[in-house]
Image: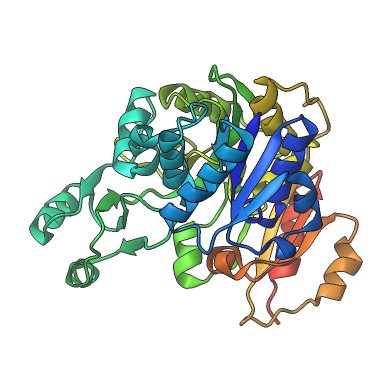
Length: 396
């Protein structure tokens, strides 16, 4: 089996996807813009060959790289980046090279356009925020007359909370329209909730091989726009309602042969048409693993190996990884360079060293949301986890 992995060096832990594929007898071929000598040793050992392009944004170069691999190794069976940014290009390359094991260009709209996602959430019977396609200021005022302030404006196609804002009044509304972006935008009613996810891997039949859930208490939009401190955590045990609505979404979106990352709001306050406090409301779907170090956190929390489960799905369409292992809370806590903190790194390690799994700098490309320096740690009790978060975030 010939598998082309796009940008296998980013995020840095993605070498494990390649390593697990190789362990399963898959011929792993990499395309990236990083010089080969700069790749991690573990990644180099996992790749049969690596093709460097000057930029992954140049589709002509990507086509030439695929053509080279096809000429050298024969038909390409799989192509994947597991990265939101490259999903549409991945689909175009599959389309052009007749790779049938993943999404192709004509499949992408429901997975990339937030407006189309709502149709599938409705198909699954899951409420979602009312929305309006941004057109004129008068149309926006009419929509706000129905749902009230605040409203959220976001790109119809976009990653995470990038270029997303909350508008609180007419002045902010006029400012937004005076500087209206050229890309299509949505305006949504504001939902006061805690982001709760359904993350996992499913096979070619749409069967869920593995799933977990993580929770972000504060709004990612506010964390990004206001540079707030960030923490989130993988739940020790997935709530039944998350599993139930998540499974319905996987079926409604016809998710097959890939990782998925589905986001919901758990309502903090009642909202007419959406539900009561504690109810789940659909937010969006992403056809890739949760971002950053979250796959590693899922592994730590569940004593599992999501990378192997995914590679088993690719090679065998099932996985025998034992999921009946002890579960934990696993949290991500970050710090920002401009902030002065009360406790030093040495003090954190002295008190919590036996719980910390990963610490270090976050790549600059992810730092606006994820912070500049991170700690990932596991706990059996939620209150111990929250005490750790507080200790790391205390300002001096």
